[in-house]
Image (cartoon, rainbow, N blue to C red; front, side):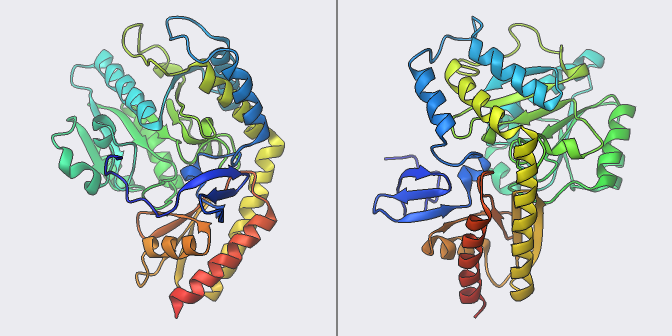
Length: 387
């Protein structure tokens, strides 16, 4: 019935509340996937439910031929929270990245006919469209779809020497995830950020941060890059922005603001009143100082508990991530996929990443009790797989 593009787990979920999902057999699962960092407020959050009901009775869609108040409010809220100046709303993270690449290419052409090269990182993930695949540094995703768009150059993540060697006047942009998601939760280093800042200014290249997975509260700040000394020209967002409804955003500042003109880009559904009303509600919740401070507290507590597990079980080789964007790298004796299956059997949902990493992504409303519950299950899984 469905196109065969997913290796789905044999479970069919029918409802959720908070961090609990219930399947069609009535079994309850503790959700530490959160739709892969989407369900920031958990499932069926009362304020989201209220907004959805109200907006469904008011206005769902009118097209971007016109203004709509929900989009205006979401734009104002997002830009105020992030400190950026312009926004385009779309339907997904891949679409947000496609727009970022278009801005970069046109920006380059305005300077020089040959300024069209885009530098991207090994082990990165920016989407599955043909454009974003060209800057996704994973051969398994690229190989069957070549030829991809030309003039994209891969370098190792956090390799200052490689970046220095590749940068020249023809580079129009550098794109990276400040914390790689699919690639295994590797964080950008201070030295690499410093090199990007210096070289992007020297060669007039735009900097694009893909914060689709690491942004919007998950690391305890609105953007993860709020914790970095470099503010990118373009940031792409999605996932948590809608809390479960499909919305992405490309936010810009300075040089990137006015590159495009009417007719250069568009979206039929992007920024419709329904998704923007939900995004505004989500942003209202997750961008307050109190909410972000609690994410930091819960993130520190979760890391402490995971660190204790690591001390007990050598199977955990390394802890990775920031805030509630956490994960652990396993020894090669057990695959992340097998670990996720074993946890599922004990009704804990986890998701794997590259580099034999298991991602640990609770909703941002997680409590210490729920973290403790997850640790009890993880301990059982580790005990079984270590024997």
